[in-house]
Image 1 (cartoon, rainbow, N blue to C red):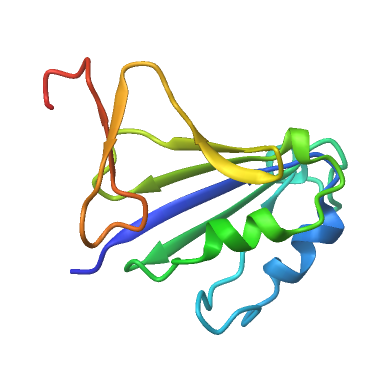
Image 2: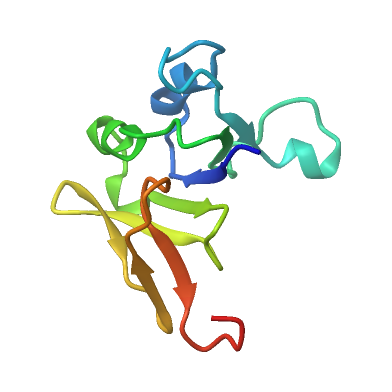
Length: 133
């Protein structure tokens, strides 16, 4: 059975920046395209909603090495709004990355800790307050 990871990108006004990443085959390494989530998905409209800035992707296996660096390198119109949520299959919750000083870095979340783990791109994020840790 393969590993899975989910990535959610939130970024204000980033339609142009993210559009190439929504096309099939946009990158041979990552293969799958991001899917744009907009208000139309919730209210039944067929046209995009300019007030929703969310893109999602799910990877089978750890095939997304370099994706965080690629996202960091994009010309974001509002880099202060960029948030990247990442959950690898062994994580207890999503990790949060934001752009600080031009770099996409993980934001420490209260009551969590990340430990290196071989097959995971980012390591394993665990809740320190969970009875299951």
